[in-house]
Amino acid sequence: MKGFAWLIALGYALTLVLPLPFLPKPAPDLSLGEAVTTPTADNAKPTATITVLDASAGVLYTFAERDFLIYTVAAEMPASYGTEALKAQAVATYTYYLREKKVNADNPDLQGAHSSQLPDSFPAGYSPEGLREKWGNDYDKHLTAVAAAVDAVAGTYLAYEDEPILAVYHAYNGGRTETAGVVWGQDFPYLQAVVSTADATRAAETTTVSDADFAAAFSDVELTGDANGWIAPDPSVTASGTVTALTVGGKVFTGGEVRKRLSLRSANFTVTRAENGFAFTAHGYGHGVGMSQVGAGGLASQGFSYSEILAHYYPGAVLKTAAS
Image (cartoon, rainbow, N blue to C red; front, side, top):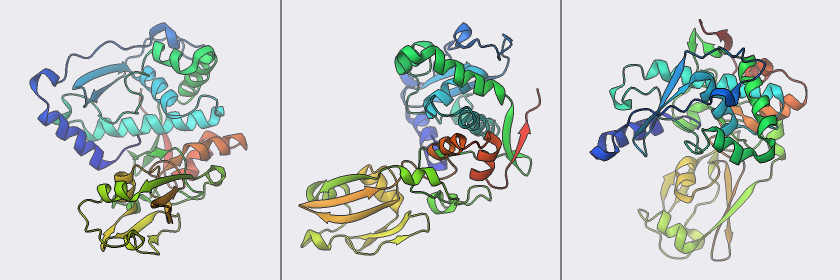
């Protein structure tokens, strides 16, 4: 999800061009009900709700807030991670959607929804059946762990200057997170580059792109002559490894643009000439901004608390509790 302004705009645009049969339908009742009852839930009937828009299908879904957080934490982080990592994910998730509620309060394009930013597993994974399919025989164990983490930090969010932060996160990076300004062109004091040691242990992924596929991906660029000269050497990169400028056929592209065109795992990559193509080796998975989920898991395994994990990845943000 891990949220960007341009994706939000795209979601909004989709709602404007959908034909009538695909306009939002009444919100189904997708509460987990007894499926998420745990000793820490107090069996209290939840009152807060989160409504999301599945823009691709034109459908609105309303969830009890607790259920939605359990589903999303389950979707975004392996349930086998340490408890403190799951708590950190729960707080980041709650913060993200709390901010979405505030930002989108008067946005008519969302048709009454709080957000259209959803994990790839939505909506299939957002049901007891979806979780059973995901976890199999570990369903009870993993559900208990995730629900306990969500309940332990219920109502806790990250704030900067008394407002919920943009609590974005990603799977992992090359050993150091990236600043928001590099990735999206807008900087935030709490989304700065920090070391993320556990991430550096993850293997890089190499994608080999044939000359023909590369030319098709950059069809708007004049690629002539020997393919060895299509990409200029020595691209510009940040201290975190994100490519900020790669010249292709005389035209400069950001690493993010190259990543999108070639479906790379991240904009932190190196490129070498391969036989009849180019080998792109990506370090990390995702945009690289905010909390690293692998990094959070690593810190939790070392004994760090969820509050220490969050303080590391969102420097300057403070924990607050939402009014009941």
